[in-house]
Length: 199
Image (cartoon, rainbow, N blue to C red):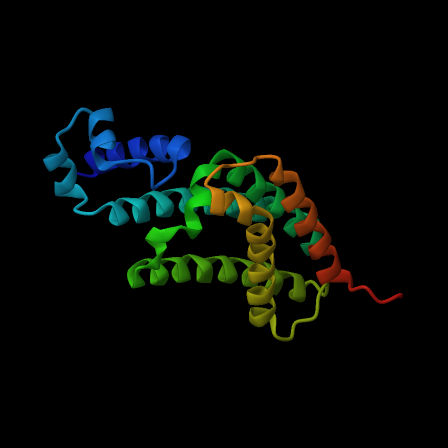
């Protein structure tokens, strides 16, 4: 059963990468792996359930790469977070059609809102653990670390959203915005760590 689900998820990822969530039908996914629509619905009775599994699969893939980076990093917390921004940028470029569709109509359901809140909480927890290590090394202030992680994650997502809002509304991707998003996120990170006051 898991092998068949894996086939479905991989086929869905390929379709979603090219056409996005809304323009991909369950029929097309079934045809790609040569199964009937009824067989597909045995594993996924609704499209949102498949979308959730696709996002979980890709999020796990990204998280695994991030954890590897954290495990071998020998520099400062600031340098690590800058590297993580570059890793996330590469990931978003690869799966841009999925990223762009994160804010569309299908998210309105309560179950999807809860799902994305769980993903957000995972992002915050991962950063919190990085900040904890930085505090233990004496690099950063150890107070309010969880709240700091929450604010930083929300700031980065807000910058990404504001840079991509016209693409999200039009449904037409503009990959030229990647550099703009990364540049602003890096500048915001620098300000977050160093402030704007003269030393």
